[in-house]
Image 1 (cartoon, one colour):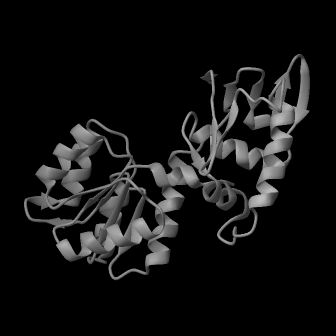
Image 2: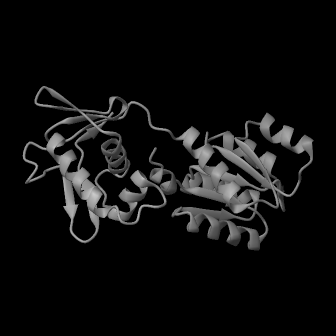
Image 3: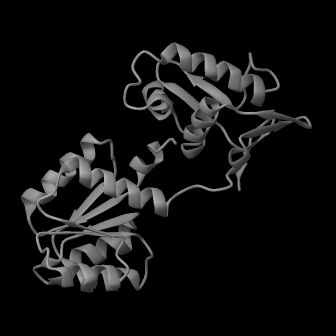
Length: 235
């Protein structure tokens, strides 16, 4: 399943150790996450949550003006974002406290970067999955949940690759998606060399979604960059 959309989620990292904050930023950026904010205290974290509305919070337990448990309680009083505790404290009671408050995961320092990313993605995937996505284009309707295109009263089935390409484009609707991003979404990390295959799939998708595939209205080529899907509405 395409998970490129996970990388667009805004991540709040709260830790009073500057070196750790910088390390986490590096790990996240290397994985492709592009929207990261940080805080070093309970007060600044709450202020960021109110003003910038992150999609997930990674909290240290020990903070200079309180603790992560108090911070989570405060955040949950006005937001339902998922929370991961990341702390050097491995006392079992702390884990019980975190999970008892409704934390989504609890990772103990030191940690392996790959494990951290794996568990972060697992929480994001669980909390921000897309179900029953239906979009209307200029000439048709796409139902991702059924892998179908409905055009002029006819139903066209989508292949697995076509579904993954369209899912990526729909998640980034009306914005340019690069060729590399589309290839990675469909073929994974070893996506190099699949540009020609992508072009073939794009052509076949246009035959299903466009009245005139040679003059597309919805799936637009942005020369030198990638593709953009123009949608009318989403449900």
